Image (cartoon, rainbow, N blue to C red):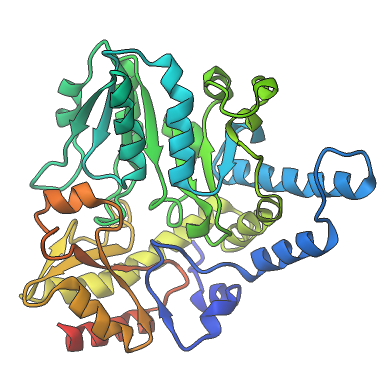
Length: 398
């Protein structure tokens, strides 16, 4: 494996030339310069409506199609029509719940966790209003992981869908989606996976995971503010149409009311190109190098936190890249999370405090009253010297 050179990676992100340390990446990564260039090019050179026969419209459509195709390749989907694009993961999941709703009757069951972002909980809890029964798969209190032993008793003949996170946006813990998929499918249900906190750090291979639906936020994978929902074509075809009545047979358009944002979609090939460049054209090699580099970043910060007696590390203390991503949260004992972060703010370092819309998880941890957690979320373009700067800032703040 060729080691990742963060200095080379950083040159692709204009924002990183600033005298600032960005470590709120789980909230949104920095954007590739090539993405911004592609957006500008589309708006200034081919900003027309698609579907016409004149040459500029045909050219514009080809750029949008290339963006859809690039994301399909990036996530391991066999067909670009398996990818539904939208403004955010929250919006896509709300649309999915709406499209699933006509096929659900009173007494049908959906399983959600208490570890997920609210986007993957609230949209389906709202279906209780039509008689759907919601069951909750809770984190194991000792390991703070989702265990199959706790899921299996929740599955029954009326279970239609299980919703889970691939990786917690607070804990950083990676869950075994393939094992859960086998269990869920054996019960005759479908599996929806929120991969937002996973996709910036590890390769998503939708075909191998076994999930029925998978969502990710592209603005957290170095791109523009878009999100993607991936599913087998048959699943998308079976969903109710939420677009214009005469588009009922068009996948994925029937699930994209108002169509996609053309200029942002046209910029998506730049994400795939960049990630492949990190592995000499090989996406698997790129993410292997990313995981190795990020593990070193995580270990530097985790080592600091493990040695302190005035904080509680939330989640796996290990930096093992097979078990976690470099999203690290902790609860300070003597100060509120906001007070700690406000001090760090003054040192040109961006970290964050709160519940990160995983409010049910923070409540489960008993940290809501104190204002949640402090979260430091790193990605591959961060450096060990930046981690050291964060550690020095935390030493002052704590």
